[in-house]
Length: 430
Ligand SMILES: CC(C)(COP(=O)(O)OP(=O)(O)OC[C@H]1O[C@@H](n2cnc3c(N)ncnc32)[C@H](O)[C@@H]1OP(=O)(O)O)[C@@H](O)C(=O)NCCC(=O)NCCS
Image 1 (cartoon, rainbow, N blue to C red):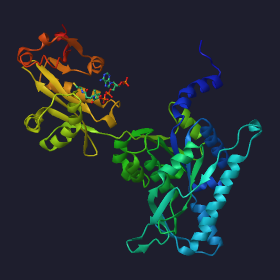
Image 2 (cartoon, rainbow, N blue to C red; image 1 turned 120 degrees about the vertical axis):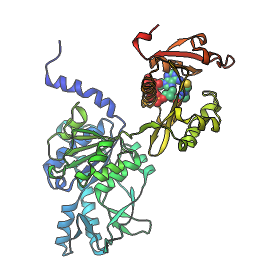
Image 3 (spheres, rainbow, N blue to C red; image 1 turned 90 degrees about the vertical axis):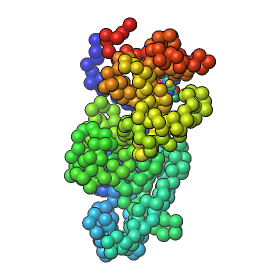
Image 4 (tube, rainbow, N blue to C red; image 1 turned 45 degrees about the horizontal axis):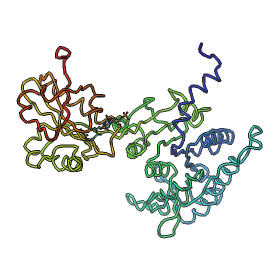
C-alpha cells in the first residue's frame, strides 16, 4: 500500500532529484530587493546551503541596485542612470566597493550562523571572494559615457572551477577589476549570465521580484525563447546564453520555498527554459559537401564507413540529409533508392561531440519519412560495427541474399558487412 504520510511522500518524490542535482554547477542570482529583506534573505540562504550540502556546486551573484542608490545618496554622490543602466563616475567607486564588501561580510555571517539543529555539525561553507570576472568599460554609447560602468570581458573559468572543486561558493561582486588595473561596476545579472554561459553551467537560477518576472509558459525550449524574446527586457539576454546553459529557472524571489519546490518537485513553481541547443534536419545541398566530408572522413579512415570520393558525394548529394546546429554540420545520412520498393540507408554519422542525444535516431526517422514519401516498402542497410544500434531502431538481420537483386550484385563479400532490414509497412513483414 502506498504510504500516505506527506513527509515520506515528499522525500520519495525528491530523491531522484537529489541524486540528479549532485555535482551540478548552478549560478544563482539574488535581487537587490531580497538583500533588503533580512528574513527572506535568511530563509533563501538556508535553502541555498541545503542545496550546497546536497552536492550542488553554487556560484552566487547579488543585485545591489537599491543599496548602491542609498549609499551614493548618503555620500552626496549623484545617482546617475541612462535608462536601466547606471553611469558610474570614478568618485562613486569607493562607495560601491564599500557596500559590496559589507554585503559579502553579511552573507558570510549569515551562512556561518548555525541553527540549533546544526549545533556540532560540520563547518560552514566558504563564500569566496575573488576577481572571478574581468571587466572592460561599457564605453560611450549614443553619446553617453558610462565611465566606470563595465561589462564582462573575461570569466576566470579555471579559477571558479578550482574553487568549486574545493566546495567553496564563489561570490560575484559588482566592483570588478579590468586588465588595465582599474575598477568597474558590473551589473550582477549580466555577470550571472556571463559566468553561467562561460562555465556551461547546468543551471542558472534567477530569483526575481514578482514584478520583474516575464510572463512565460511554465516550460519552454530555447527555440520558443528566441520567438518570445521581444516580450521582456530580460529575454534577449537569456536567449543569447541559452545554447550554453542547460536549464534556466525564473523564480519569484519572495515565494516561500520556491527554490526547493522548483528543484525537487516534478512540476516546479517557476518558468523553466530548456536550453536544448536546438538543431535542424534538412536536405543537403552542394555547399554541405565539405561539412559532410569532415564528418565522415575519420569514420572512413577507421573503416566504419565505406570510402566516398568528393565527386561521388557531390553527384549523390540529393540523397543526403544533414543535421545542422549553428551553421555547423553535426550529422548526416543518405537514402539510396535500390528499386521501386526498397531503399538503402548509408553514411549515417553523428559528430562524436553530439552523440547519445537522440540525433542518430532522429536522422533515421527523417530518412524513414522520406522513404515513405517515396512509397518505398522496405529499408536495407549494411553495417560492420553498428548492428545493435540498428536492432534497437527496429531493424533485423537478414543475409546478403535477401538484398534486392540490383544491390546484391554489388555486395562486397570481402568487406563482409551484416545486412539489416526494416519493413516500412505492416503488410511487408515477412
Ligand atoms: C551510430 C550513430 C549514428 C548513433 O548516433 P547517436 O546520435 O549517438 O544515436 P542516439 O543518441 O540516437 O543513440 C545513442 C544510443 O546508441 C548506442 N550506440 C551508439 N553506437 C552504437 C553502436 N555502434 N552499437 C550499439 N549501440 C550504439 C549508445 O550507446 C546510446 O545508447 P543509450 O541510449 O542506451 O545510451 C553514431 O554513434 C555514429 O555516428 N557512429 C559512427 C558511424 C556509424 O557507425 N554509422 C552507422 C554506419 S552504417
